[in-house]
Image 1 (tube, rainbow, N blue to C red):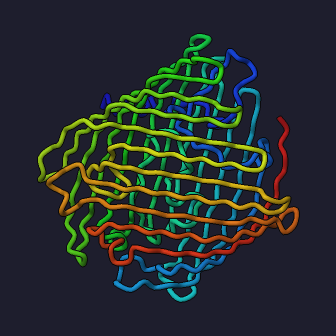
Image 2: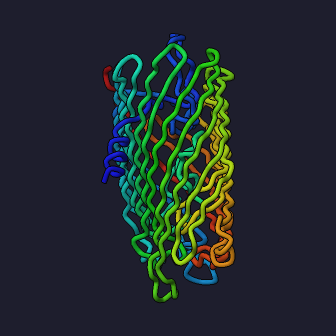
Length: 446
């Protein structure tokens, strides 16, 4: 009971994440919150796109062709054309001490031939950032998603945009077209107790559930929670050094699937990590971060014996946000659980995103992800060894008029997990799409 109270309390304290690569404050007494401890993602917006204090409403209509809509159900992939509509309403409100954003976007998708895949999605997110005092800042974040198509989101293969923190959720495998419910919540608080010293703490919670296990044989439900605390010292106006302690618990549950001869199983993974980090703001809109340290993991999964050991953990990231371009890249080496895999895995992952406005009315963007996992248990290397995933998306955007815009793109996904039927039966997915969006934006007074 005490642990539950501790977690709930932690979820109501969070840090400001105005931008991972935000310009260093003109007031040299105010410290930044470095990417390794902020828990936020690098912004992919260019300087000309960044804005606040607005009410936004609109919708997007799209059509796409996916060559593998019945992933995992047969040896031969089945392709189909889909049609989607996505209404959206968003609010961004900023005052000198408060910044809050809320977004709601339901979605409806219909397939031309495979009507059994028709879906209704829900997307709700909120971000509440409040400066309690000149030196104490609070941030609360939550994102809920109910979906049947992982492609219908901005960063389908990275678990979010590129982050500079190892607290980002582990997403080693994907069921591209399957019912799933996910939720992620976070809270951070920071306190600058001296001119060059800052401390902070955070709490996180993630949840992943597949309502129809027969669609995803071999994948498990999971939920995880984590706590962290950090100390940051400003070496110079643009350099930070510190230490971050992280605790994480991940629970996995593999349900029974009779027609796939799959029996239920459960696992629990606990990790304790100490990371020393260094961040340098090379320019006002360019930052580089590295962190490394020891990690201890404890894994239990019946009927196998418990596994306890030490391993190195490391993270590196780089982010840039310019007036007409932006990019971010990260690499992480950690031990973790969840993300659809039962047990604990040694993971190496890399994520990248880029955006370029090369003309007044044309811009292109791309994202790429790579992850390779290996089971930390020697006894499970034959039955559940792990695998790898690689994906990429390239897209182009063009405003047709003041409120209408056109976007088209291509996504490629390849996964290799020999023991997971939903992937091994048809490991590749290719998707081409075209969408037209209508946006109505109204500014709000400060």
